[in-house]
Length: 246
Length: 138
Length: 106
Image (tube, each protein chain N blue to C red):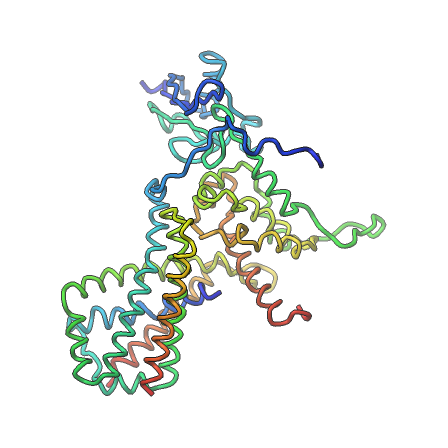
């Protein structure tokens, strides 16, 4: 009884179906197996047509995000033994279009990420002869939390606003923008402000807070967004009252 | 990558799942969120109630007493008890959210979140004390 | 900013006020202030201004939050013009009423 678990795995074969269905399989669940191990077992031994993404199997690549029993989780970090005997439902990540089975298209996020310029932006790059850019540990602490993002998209799956309005730029994009805004080597805050202060930017967020709850790397995107709302609002007031002095 | 046409956006075979109108009943977190948002209705109700009170005071002693009796009727009383609970929930969620937006720096290090939240709660206590004092001392 | 100001004002001032005028006084737990006291308090310019700020900011806080809750909760974004008019219009009307009443007390 305790060494097997029933997995209900969502299937969607675009050439054959117009809706998704569920396949049920019994897989062994030794205590160190995660959902990803279960999926690999199904693919290796039972049904080779099951398709899903994974890579590092240790919670750093961000590929294996799926909806496990209704919650967005990394399948490499979710233990089967916690759900035995099941049934455990594995579905593709919510709020993204499904290409096939458990694979979703994250092109939308990729475009949004590019739009927030997730790299150090400077007016003038220092020449090598002048040495490195210096940063104290306290300056690192300012943005370090936001740099932990692995782009796993669990936050987008959890965010009801993104589900209702796919134009919303979303938690990870804003958190990553903040990672660079708060980096003392960066000078691109103004450029990012233009993208983020649109209606589908930070102002779409109503601080539900689910993104922070599901984040496997404790990035706290909700905190990043609220903090940035304050910054953006103050910037707007500054430009309103002192258009040239700001 | 530049110049690559974006064919993928409206691929007809992708499965796009619609968000249910009742998404907010899907989990306790979502439900707590909607309750928090709904508390604003009771904020608006209390504004109306306050303005009715001001109008009653304006109209004289008799109207003021009439307002006080009306406020004791069971329906209004129940509404106000519910409103009070929602208002407290609003204050609690708002003051706990404040530190997420305001990061205070003490010298070079970041102040703890409890500093900002604590500041709000302290101000709340002071404001409430002032209100009690203004209205209750004869 | 109006939204957060309204949220802070309503969070700070309303619970105590509602407790007194909605629960304690009607139930007789505490003696309500006399009519003269109320009139005197309202005539005080600081009190009147605070009350006006409380009403106006709270109404705008409500307008903004309720509008978005309707969009997200009931998915009626296609009615956004109607909703925006009702919400912000209501807030403006309410604030005007508050200003009118409090002006009259002085």
